[in-house]
Image (tube, rainbow, N blue to C red):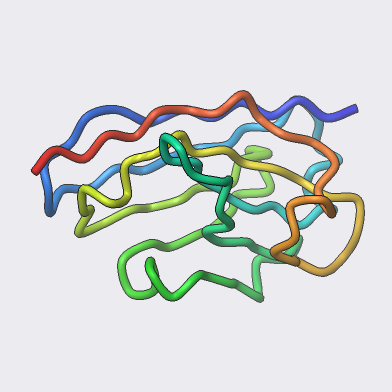
Length: 124
């Protein structure tokens, strides 16, 4: 079992930046792809970005390309989501998740361990 805890959320103005962290309870997370999702009020959970265990392959949805960067520090059992040029439409609860596999896929059902989520609010 791997427990994931998100941190770094909060309130920021349009154009601002935040860095989310996803820290795992076990170093075994180093072997797992990790992704970030978000869920806005009244909407379904949406895939945002994912990273392979080695960190060499990264995936993003078009809406965040060029603004968000996913990275990981396996020595710290932590995956980051650097979010720049934030927009009001980025407002959501952000979740990280890890999967028992190799590929960093975007299907929610493929991920086995989820964090509790953290609020990100971008004011206009």
